[in-house]
Image 1: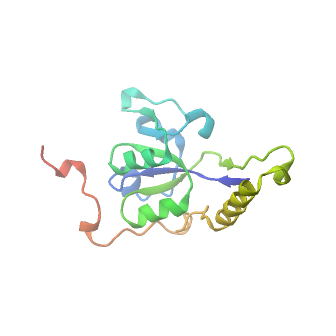
Image 2: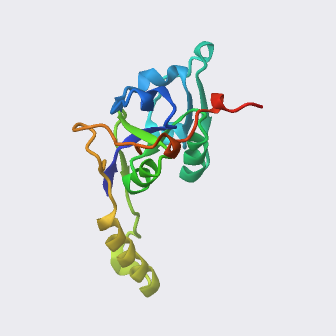
Length: 168
């Protein structure tokens, strides 16, 4: 079992990214379009969206679909702190992330009642590989949220352009 942070992700053009926020209180999300996965199961109670201020909540089926929606520049997302994925996307200039004041979630692996002894040889081999892989996963922010904000590519061309720059 492992504790994992709940993290806010946004497009680089979003105000949270432009302000280089390192922590975003969940109460500030009431006026945002927020993508979530299994809302109450994963996050606990979230403040209701304030539709008069543009707030909305959309439940996404997968982590990948949620990240893809945020990378398109529409809304923000709440995701588990899988920093090995988030840092890679941040370094490539695809998204920004910040901590939230949500409680961490616990990620665990369920075994049969008799424990590992009750596993078949193939399941036991798979479990060994999962344990080895889990030891190398980055479950802490790579750039030190308390220390300094993330560094963005220095060339403006490396950053995605805001949607308002395009003519339709």
